[in-house]
Image (cartoon, rainbow, N blue to C red; front, side):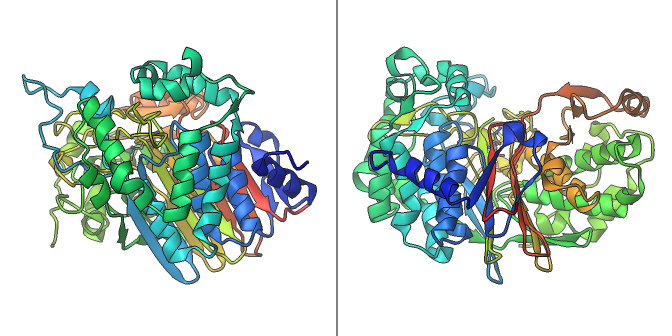
Length: 571
Ligand code: DON
């Protein structure tokens, strides 16, 4: 047994001891929800969930486990997990609530017209492909400061599961093989990337063992020296070198100067629960907060479940929340904020325009009065709870799958293409079709507006922890899972499994997963003026919760390869 790689050895041990159960999202619907007594992890890949559970098992708290899970995702889920991207975390440790913004920033040399061609038209390729699309990574410093403030076991131990995965190798899943094949064009453009992710010119084969020596060395020095190993000296110069080689503007000083920001969590109440989410530059929490407030006041509970009236209200509310999103951007340039958009008068004025049985055209919503400021495709979400009641919701991303496609050869990780989350030209849709405004124009050092929505729901000793990937569909997925759980009392897995609807103001369409609307409901909604489109199932929610009796539940989204597990399972 001693020749078993360490990560497999620990997983085998845990299973032998009967202390951990894992449940694959792909098959989740056919199993009862995973329940236990000692904490829970839900994340986008099996090895990452295992890393989190291993840390909980070793006595780490929820923050230790969340950081270990995020780092493991940076190895085994290269399309979204990252060191070259950024994200947000909302945590409750003891009685303290905190939220960390480790979103990427625009490089110092960024300019508002940098993605316009010579005729002034937006050039989408420039904000999506190659290093010109990359923001300054926030993950290396972000995960470290999160651990510094709230972690309980040594940093090295938290990095170790990821380092072992990169060093010893991990078994390539069918999903990873297909995902690399899907992004082949993006990855083969750069020899630095192809050398790692298209070995011999082909995607890694499912079932083969993938070793990532450069990334393992990066993780080793990260474990030893902390983030400066990735953000100063030779490492920062390596990022500048490869960026310059392909026309990027990232400079070593941008990398070194990056700082994550602790922000006041966005807190609000709805349906008898208290919530904490991420405020700007994330818009997801604001959208969820607005939508919950409006739906509660529109008597959502009283309308029959799965009926046309609820679908109509959901569409009308989201149409208005996403219209308000147009005003949002980096906290320094935003034209509205959570205070103005959650102001009771503003919510009342939005509510007063919602009509029964009649869709409001999105164009009319855009012309609604706008509040003024009073003063002053790849992402991955993980949820963790520990036995002490601490909880972490963390969403991290490279933006699109494999980010901008360019890998830093000396460091072994990919750079993001988060710059496309800016309004490259105000009014021009980004890759998720989100139409954004002046407030989110490109500017040096600015953070691009995000739809991410890591969120904690709290009531007495109970908590629910969730978030999602899926671009603009992140807040709408999170919202519907919350409604399923807190209004309709679904089990955690059922709440996630149920088909979802989506509306984002523009385009003026109600998007529905294939089985979300019955033919009769669809007919009614169309008669009320909704344009309905059947849409794919790509938003993925991973959640855990702690029930009043101290038991834990974990669930991964069956729409993807996520895996949920608990420590000390109940029979
Ligand atoms: O921050 C955002 O809103 C986007 N960059 C998230 C991207 C995403 O969820 C991609 N996954 N499908």
